[in-house]
Image 1: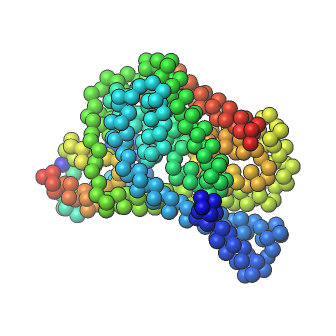
Image 2 (image 1 turned 60 degrees about the vertical axis):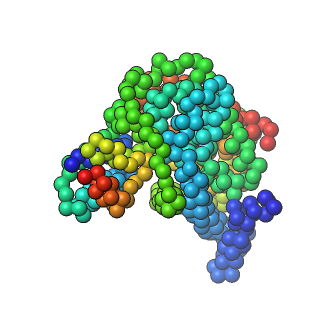
Image 3 (image 1 turned 90 degrees about the horizontal axis):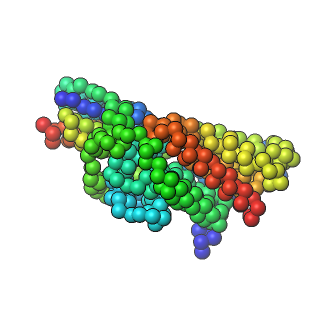
Length: 79
Length: 328
């Protein structure tokens, strides 16, 4: 599984990444994390408000720091 | 009725009286005494700003959760001319603003085909006239000054966007903003519970980010209020000094602080007789422009447009400052 965190590296992006890592841990899964900080790159996903969460190239949440529980649901939904 | 609401809820007369009682009866100090007055100013202002911050940000965030940027983008897509700039500025006040999001907003709006001028009206207005900060200004300076702040701030944004639109600056935007094919996401549907959650998060987040600034701001304010002689301040920032607005704006532009931390300084300056125009210029320059936001904007626009933007906003703020010092 590939997880991308979109956003310029502000506090919210860090929080979202921490939540996503925790979600993966709780699910007992493995994932490769990527931070997409360059506006040229992350704007391609259509995000208007950072941070954004992309799981296996699918945009699953944007404009907010999604909670660990919600990320778990999103991942389960995705599989 | 509006005055009563403003006095009790926004100015918090009850808190003022309560802290006065504490300082006089518990600490045994007088409000006519420098130390007593400083302590009163400090306790009252810090508590007041904390209460306002949490309550106002919660309430405003709830309203703003109905205006996500995706909705704003759709609303602004097909408007033209000065009315477009007006709508851009209006939505700027409604859309929740975060300085780290001005870049994705700019890219997304421009790529979706919004006129450049409309996007700039939005971008100028969004940090400058934010509903939460307007309520704060109202609580410290009254409804009249808050109204003036909103009207001049919006005018600055409308005219600025109109100028940038008329000058056809599209070629000074980094080409990738136009050329890349970008997804246009839909607005996320939120339940009432999610709106509540979002608003609580916003309130806590802003509290965590600003509580230190509030204490520092209030401490500086209390220092100015009671310890720095009025003549000194008026010598530098007095209404009769032609350079007062210039100085206030120049100090404010590179500063990256929230209005919550700036207000106590502003109120202390007004109490010392500094002109309202000078103080407005200071507050506007702190919120509208900052070094980090200018550096971020450099990623998406070329130098010429960036210089036009910074120069226009700075001159506009100076003008507002001088006009209000003359007429108020």
